[in-house]
Length: 256
Image 1 (tube, rainbow, N blue to C red):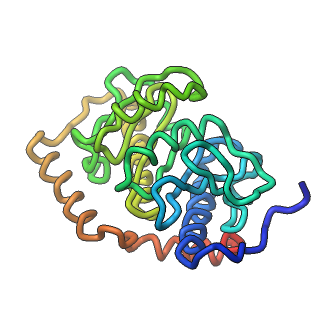
Image 2: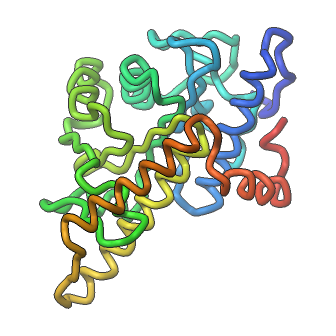
């Protein structure tokens, strides 16, 4: 295999290309923040105008090599639809096909193995929403028990059942997962969940007694986050455009 970038296919709509650009930018952002696990983990986005097609990273490339043209388009059965020379990660297909098949309200699904996220996923008590950004997940965070590397397609049913209507989930002994109505929403949601996990571990490391707001305040804050997210609906959060400008300055090849 001698190339990374590809030419835009003539049958690729403007809407699909825009989604590809956003998704490629998300991969580059995960890399820029140091949240990669080598070439593994996955971020997917539904192809606009479809309910059974989504875009996923080409298996074998680093996140800093992902661009709009080399993202692989597959269907819910795992069939590659755009004659890509790249394959896909089987575990990524299992997790993401499950969620895209059940959650048509979610455009983007983001899954990582960050140190902080994996560490919190191993705690018996799990995630503690002790930060302003983390309180958006108060009583709204799903959990899925570890079943081994996600290669067994039967796990999809349990994964969907555990996720329910949540927009974020902790995969026990595994990592974090967030969803969004746009790529930007999934990334922003992940940013705050990852940040809150890091803060939780830092606070726990001190051994000092932890102060948490009342349940009433936490619920109030979570609803404030929901109101803001609902107002944005399918419009990316305001920070997304700043991130795109940052990526353009760093390396605009994600748009190719």
